Image (cartoon, rainbow, N blue to C red; front, top):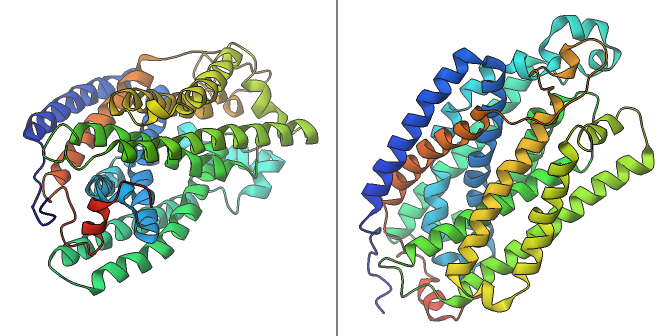
Length: 406
């Protein structure tokens, strides 16, 4: 096989790109209707749907940097997918604007009267205030976009024959992974944990690191199965999908470990500030969704991914990956919506007793479709611009000859 052959994207990529834009634009119009009909619900649904696709983009960038540091055939054949996915970050930066506009409808600490009358919020006001929140968000997005832009520039230089570009990508990946891990930890605290300023958890950052790992892996499997049907088909081997399946199994187990650890710590400490977060999610109908997540986010994929034949079968593994991506959305829904009552108000905004009752709004379904349609349009736009194989990578010939693994 000629390793220097510039593998082009599948023939139907233009059709998929156009279809994604039409779906995204149509769903975005429905979101605009929802914005005027139920503004509180719109901002809440936007935050949930936005995190799903941000998780895919950042997860892809994380796996790309891990591959630059570790090497191996498992990542070589999907490196262009990760690069294209990370280059959607400029679009995701723009799509964060609705979250900024909805700050005072999402976060209690944006209300001056609450900050003055509540002792807990007053002590946390140095960190939890709109100015510092936006400054931190700016640092995250600038860092993510700079990493994605620099990686793309170095990848182009590598294709042009630059020997130094390979080492530069490895060095950038080392620092980039540290920044990504720290920034996504703060994202979990800033954007999700602060919906309930009473609650704090030392496990929350690890949960969002796991979020990126699972989202990135699920998307990688889906795209690998798609590219396998095109010019890249001869390069994908069962061993590659087995590697993706093993990594997915590890992150499924990690999710269970982190969630159980958080629950155990809250249960053991039994602190008044922490237990409302858990109690809200095991009452009012939310307990059934919690059981659903335990079964279908952990037990079922764990049992399926133990199967070696399943992990080596792209047709079967991609079904698990699609399912896990849907579960990622449901898991994000569980982080956000229980903090709000059936009337759509955060308990901090409503005096007196508060009980969160399970509810799903049509915007919860439409919003991730709108953001996902626009995101896939941008992703396919980026994917078609480069050969699907990193033809200038000095490790490419060895990777193509390898049977998989590291």
